[in-house]
Length: 262
Image (cartoon, rainbow, N blue to C red):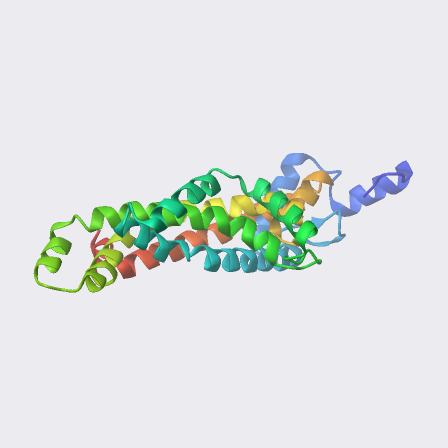
């Protein structure tokens, strides 16, 4: 922001933004401002940090919600592959899932951008959700499929599920009514970790695809040495992550009532 300006203008701008004060004083004032929901003022945008970070966090939350909605397709696929580990669906899905799990989101985003430019199957227009959402959703969906598949195979061997099958219940009812619900418990147990990986991967994806989210804002703040904006992005990102973990814990409590007694 200050590149190419004379020293007097730079000094005046630093004084207006409070950057000429001792570092400890700046940190103390920033912490005190948190009590008033004041995250300081951005030197890059010359505006309060809070509304900028709030707007970008909403964009990141939208991207994460769409990616999660797409990735949830991995759960029913995992139930089917876990029920028939040697079936044709499992044989076809497993190698693809393993490859997607091992693929970093930034590599997936670059591959999807190449595919979009080459085939025009996906939109790369500014503000388009297709490429960034798929870049986040595909590895997450593959992870959910692998976890759900293993959990379903274990649930089908559980005594209560075996007993339900012995009572003459149809295989579909045993699978979807008993085994599927029981197998969700271990998957939801690590949902907080999966949500964390979703938000951490969004930073690289937003930078590569140009999605105007919190990750892109953090990158711009670090590149521009905007201290207050970078700190505000980190704080808002931590708050969003905490909310995501809380939602995962609530979902696990709904599926497994035993966790409410712990």
